[in-house]
Amino acid sequence: MVCESWKEKLDTYLDGELPQGELRTFDAHVRDCPSCSADVLSRVQLKRAIHLAGKRFTPSAEFRKRLQQSVVPKPRRSFRLGWMLAAAAAVVLVVGTLTSSYLGNRSGRDQVFSEIADLHVATLASSSPVDVISTDRHTVKPWFQGRIPFAFNLPQLQNSEFSLLGGRMTYLEQTPGAHLIYDVGKHHISVFVFQERSLPTRLSDSSLKPGKLSFNMETWSQGGLRYFVIGDASAANVDSLAKLFKGAS
Image 1: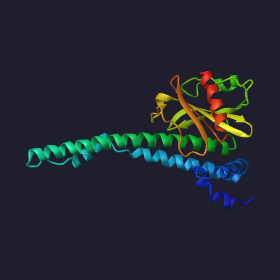
Image 2: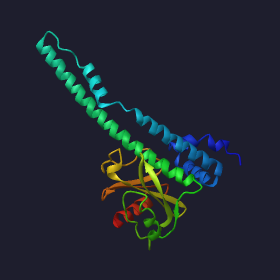
Image 3: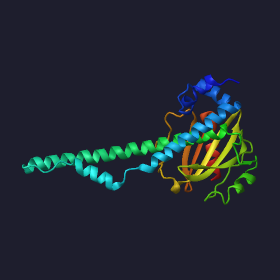
Image 4: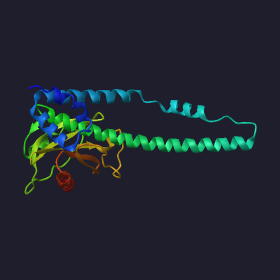
């Protein structure tokens, strides 16, 4: 099958910039086409490698301090003028620091959401999306023991519209975690669980709604663990599965 027309839009698809209708069509094609699935997986892995490589060269605190000192105006002859300039510089520095901190936190949160979406897409594009295949939570939960440094509970699914496909190990910002996959209708929903304190990027429970993702997502912290529920299912389905996990924990 010739997929050149599809592959031309793979980067746009991975960046979540396709219209909603076209995105669902693309999702279905990627799941059914081995060639495009392999290409998606390769590009996601490349994006993650570039992201991790970029973190290796973060400016040190000492470098930031020297840079800040270099832009502070030197004292002038007039004590009053010098005091005013120093006060203005202090205000600029404080505002700059707060702005940088805010933008840094927002950028960090957006990056986490992007990585979660990448993991979801890459797993569904893989020929082996799960390492332990079972619909029984009593089989899947023990499988993670000894593989991740924490324990968590899986919800009961009786009288619900969800079914468990299985689970696998995963990594977010080099932190090990659990990845569960659930089916609802013809859609797949991923549930990621990580140890909150081990994540380099700190996430607060306020304003944690992803902005431009093409998926519905819920995330929260509970019992020292950070949960992410993401998929192309409806927001109501994602919310329902999130509530089942909250109840199980």
